[in-house]
Image 1: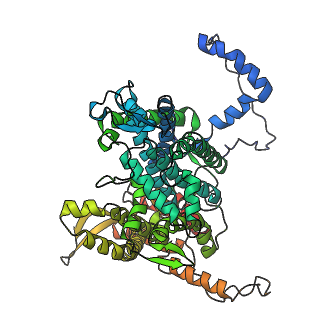
Image 2: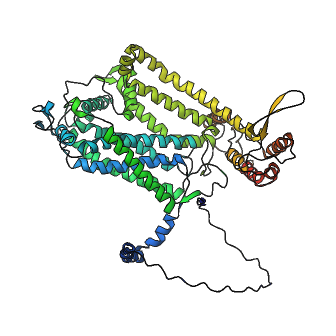
Image 3: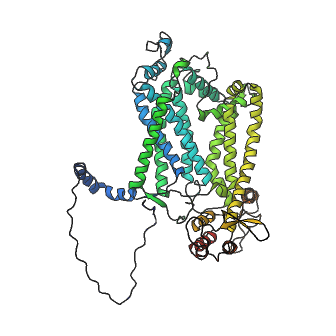
Length: 610
């Protein structure tokens, strides 16, 4: 039998009854003591240093509290672990690559083993990349594992962020951790681009040229910024060494610090969990870090490591020998950036050619707006969203239980709309590939995407919100009418109906354990509980908040009250015609026991607590 899940709430101890009566007990004969097992040679050797360290810094107390910390168990929580383990693989493979890579743009004549490029002039960076691919044992495997791990690292962070967003895990007290996550994604993209540019091949050089255009599009200071980054007019001679130091030293240190702070806050705030029986805002139901969670996490790390190894061994990625060394006068046909930068390039490709000439300077809006401003707006909005939602709802309470996406339809709709917009920009980054593969006009693809990036998110928002509201209605229907049994009955008049079963108490508790926000009314907060007029009410700020509250929550479906649930249970039991003795779905409890037992109390707590 599997070990039951544990909870982090403190266990209750038996209290004395205070009775004066005494009872006499007979002592059981003492069992013979077994000799204490002697530790093995490894533990015996480690006992001395461990005791020495514990006497000086108290490792035993710290370790005991940490190892017994409880973590909830849900598959979606593994998304963050995938990002962490990918970063570990990046560090391990990156150390190997650092030993042989030469970050120099000095031009040499290639004399390596790749015959098709013998005698060609190229930078030392590109030549060392070819040496890693063909001459260093295991070098190509490490290169490809490193590249796949970088893609997985960014992808896992994005998906983990979406899980946090859709379930409301960013709410108080985790706003700071959300900001750390947004920073990790932004810095991870920069780190990926820096590593992507290091081989100095024609494809990465094309991407570097694209970034040079973004820098030069900054009004007023663009040219100066370009000279600051490249040391001269593009491409210069120092950008690869600079990117190398940023890639292996500066940004990894920042990422490591942010990950440490991120995990420390997860431990401090305790992990969020999905609603369910026995789970409240004050406890965490799950398994202890040691041995259960440590074993699962350790095994999962080796799974991620093994998958990345298979990818590196069997799936070719970034074959730089096919592209050749970088030449500013050339560009690769059909060149595409890594996926996490494709949306920026797509926005630039579909942007109309808008330029202005002000004060003798050129303002390239066709590059600055879709690239620099769009990225800035995206990460600013991501960082500000928890505070925007908190201001609209006025909810200052702590949240440790997650929301099902359907229970906050507007937030879910915003998320799907953002994903739709991102995907359309991403498709714009490959508009030439779409045109050639599907034999359509490149101009037609571009014009379609110019319209779709505005219309598509609106359609996605409306459809998603209606689906979420429909799912809310389905939950209320299930609570008030029971779940379908699959048993069709025929009445004396010849009509057919399906028998419904009352929900188990666990299922009913899960469906009702969420907060329903009320729509604010204009002027409804003019005075406080003492009748004193509040400052700042009635102005533009309050009107905006009322409009936002109505937009967010006006269409939400209200939860059934305790009385409605009680009446629904008796109706379901009575309609079954078995005097309340019909089996309840899932746990075998009788319907009358559910109506009068723990489920009633739990549902009442969920109702009145909010």
